[in-house]
Length: 248
Image 1: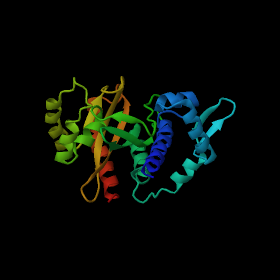
Image 2 (image 1 turned 45 degrees about the vertical axis):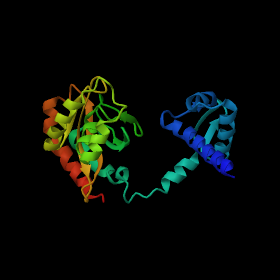
Image 3 (image 1 turned 90 degrees about the vertical axis):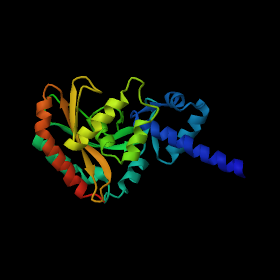
């Protein structure tokens, strides 16, 4: 009985691994999924058939490629927006985009990565497009700096000790900069992760004093100069403060 239970749990894990592949790209061939999750093609075929039958994935007969099914959207529609930063923050993010003219993003920390859970794109002809759902490393970028600098001290040190950070990363210098970002109330980055891009970010802290997320403004580095980001920082911090006041 114990073995059957373990087998059932493992099957669930494998099915979830397949579904999580769709966070990386919109469509997959069955063979691509098998390579991605490291399972035999016949196993993946059976699991996809079950997921398709239940509506969690859909197959395009013409291309024989899989995408997420309508059942996923049915589930997401029933998520409560009462305490969801992505839902609550959208009007404020749109207001900030209209004020500053650049792309606005909202990030949550997940382990040693950050995830973009909401974005409002700039309407300028030359702009930085920020796809929702993107996972980014935590050791680089303005939002990453904020998500570490304003974390609780013990958690902050735990993150800095993570073995996944690059060997070339200067942790001591980073620790010294953390205090500066906390004092300023925001952090900036210029071409740290992406060539030609710059960003300024501020922490979103809930009414109970808990760090919830990071709010960032990003755009072309030739438009978001260090001087420009210093000018915009008060507006970003004020927007982050208003968002935090809406969260528990």
